Image 1 (cartoon, rainbow, N blue to C red):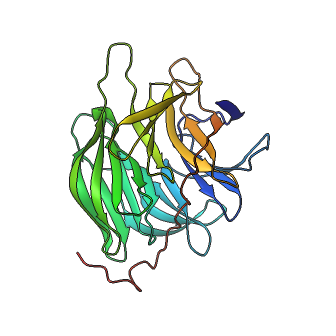
Image 2: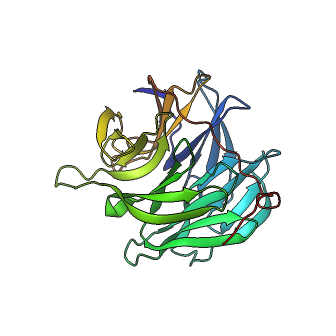
Amino acid sequence: MELVLDSQCQLGESPVWWSDRALLLFIDVTGRRLHQYKPGSATARALRIDEDIGCLAPAVGGGFVAGLRSGLWLLEESGAKSLMLAANPENTAVSRFNDGRADPLGRFWVGTVDEPKDGGRAGLYRFDQRGLTQISDGLLTSNGLAFSPDGRVLYHSDTPRFVVYRYDYDVAGGLATNRREFVRLEPTASDRGRPDGAAVDSHGCYWTALYDGGRIQRYDPDGRLMSEFPVPARRPTMPAFGGADMKTLFVTTARDERGEGGGLYALDVDVAGLPTFLFDPNVGKNHDLTL
């Protein structure tokens, strides 16, 4: 795995391949930057965001949806706020929106983080024309959102609890049901790697970044570990597939207490990833959405 951009992020996260522009988008959560990287470039365009940003996705018609500390926002392509879609329903002094992803119809799924990690106050939410709906509560750090190739499975992790969940997913109704454990990691004194952000490939396999574990793991649809890929940084945060053939695995990282990490890495792999779904602020107007 090669360092392709020394982005010097404090907490690099949420890489998203924007195929229409042939760009990789990613963020620096606490550094409050939205980076736009053209593969092969020595630098990236960095847009300033005026508060902590946990995730983003391109939106239909241009611009982005972003999960910020204060709420879900539509951003202009300059990074400026244009419209708040929903306020953060939790205490913003100790909570912000974290990992998020659009589903095949354009709804936005997003979770929060309980920053003190002591109360299990974080949740998983769905946003569409019905507004912001809580799907799950009692979490510490909502992460690892991804969909199976057929859209019938939703994955989601709670990072500090070392667990990845799997839901049955009804794309038409936006319903996630029958939550059960997909993968549970067992930490040791020397290995505290835990499941952070994730991506799914075209074979339906789940790739998760192990924060504090220095590697990416690939699991088959039944939860069996297939392979591991070392990352030259101890805190990988999220993988994303991109490139013209969707066979480049990009990995964001966070800086550790030694000041190491925070760059963007890439690896050529032999399986393609899935295309990025765009957020559609009008999802629901032309679809039968039922509670």
